[in-house]
Amino acid sequence: MNRLFLNKKLTAIVLVTVLMISSFLTACRKPLVEMSSNIETDNISQNVVMGDTAGNESQSATLGNSSTIQQNSPQSQVSSGTISSKEELTKPSIPNVSPESNFWSDNTDPEGVVVSDKNTFIINTANTGKTLSSFFNNINVWGVHAPSKDSKYDIYEFVDYVQLMQCSGGSGNRDLFKNPADSSVLDDYDFTRLINACRGILNLGAKPILKLGGVPIKFTKNYQNGYYNMNANPPDDYNVYYNYIYALADALVKEFGRQEVLSWRFGVMTEYENKEWFIAKSGDANDTKIAYFKLYDYTVQALIDAIGEDVFVGAHSMTCTEGMWDEAEFIEHVAKGTNYATGKIGTKISYLSASYYHQVAGTMTAKRQKTFVQTMSYLQDAAKKHGLNNLEFGVDEGRMLMGINPGRNSFDLNNRVVGYSYQGAFDAKLYKDAVDNDIDYFSSWGFLGSTNMPTVSYYVAKNTSKFDGLKQLETVKKTTSSKEADIQAVSAYDPATKTLRIMAYNFKNDYEYNKKASLSFTIAAPIQSGSVSIIKEYVNDDCNYFDEWLKDRKDYNITNDMFSWSPDDPSIEAFLSNASEELKNVYYKKLKPNYLKASVLNPKVENANISGGRLTLNDTIDGNSVVFYEIKF
Image (cartoon, rainbow, N blue to C red; front, side, top):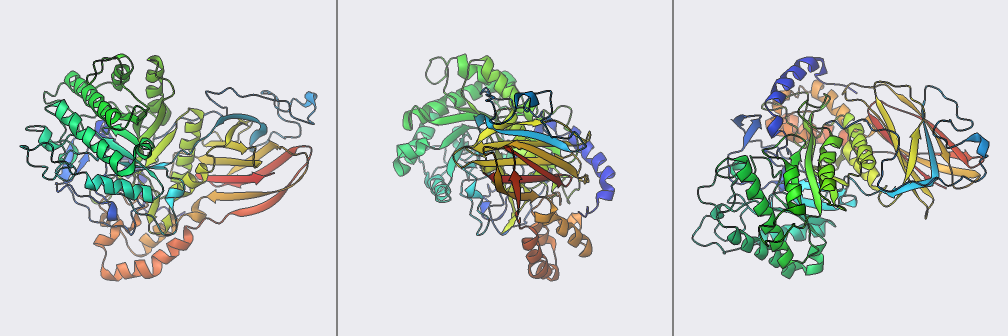
């Protein structure tokens, strides 16, 4: 892969490090701008915020489709090769394998497997564990509208939910009233936009997740601005706020039916312990905490009264970096505290979510930032401590905060991902860490770079979604030749169709990593002999347009300053707003057609023989790449 401007990498890292120091507490933030039909302007002056420094910026780049979800809003821990599951694994005996071979012993290599420099994995299709679920099954929309569907790459084949962030209010264009500015009338509700957005999401084949909790400006006198000049303060009267949420939920029930709305999900605020989103007028941390307890309790009770006790509702914290107050106190409140709306003990909660942003692509996790696993474990441990069982745990926004190369105004990544094939391996590692640590989902800002232009993230998300409903298999790694990279695998099996799926990746937290990895899988098959076909899908530069794009940038002098934000983002068409008409014509007529071809993933098929109930699969994959295998017995 060509690496444009990476000879300046060290200089860029130094610059990014300086920015990181000032941005810990504001790392988990939303898109400053939005693209295409996903745009909903709040008629406010958007600021580029880097730490505590704000500068005026308005980015006008548009993409050809809104499946490229809007932008803005780390590195996960190295996981072991063993299963960490709530369900115990069983190890039934394997037919026709002699006991003396100790085939599946934890300290003995399988008979016939030569310990070498290959990364050797042992998989037993009879040794099943928990049922896996689709992981990258959420997308974020920053506004009260439904995204569109790409004509060729339908992300809604694997995206189950669309999150409408802060969709119930907080600014003139989000408050759902006939006249949001008229504080003399507090019940002139108009939920038409929200209803239309929900209908649009359903038409895509997905379900809405409605992030409520944004307080309408007419509900707070002399409110203080938070992010994007939105009301960051509590309502003056929680009963008035309750009536609003009740009316909103009741309108949805009347429009779509109670059973349909019960299949949706609801949240209360975005990053509730982030003072830029919610803060008491006093500015005091304890006052803010109590105010959020009230906001959550009144919101949930309104939803229960309008929709029913089975409404699916939860809360989204930062957690990946420190907030104004400790989210563990909120978890204790909903478990054991007095409900401010009902006076009873406890408040309904169905899920806990966090933001997770790796601070800078290709660098180590910042010292004051939690890793992916640490972020989610903090919520899981607090829930367990206070007796909250059977909750879902997920990430409601995140991935990658900043690139290595800056745009005109910022290192920030529009879609919170990079275009390099590195991102695919990063995502694969997220998935394995999620499987090993019972993390249920991850919500992303997008999967396509432009119309008909999938990213490596798209291919990883689509292929990992095929593990949904399958039984996880114990995947034991016996040998490794690499001490510098994380080379791991996940496998799952469908007994009904006798289909085995394997994902393996070769990841190092370095854009330029290109060392190949040798893989060897020894598989205890469900049949004793015969021939099988193996479908292989490699997620690497061969299905990624970004390396061609980097070369073209150099050839056509498309410089960093033609982008407002980091050019490391896969939303490459962001440069067009600063391109000449001649360059635009070259892009659309010559360059983009090549990118469309370069982004196609072509599966490879080969046959293999099973002997004595054993299948051996050997392969080699590139640095920072992923491979998916499908084997039907």
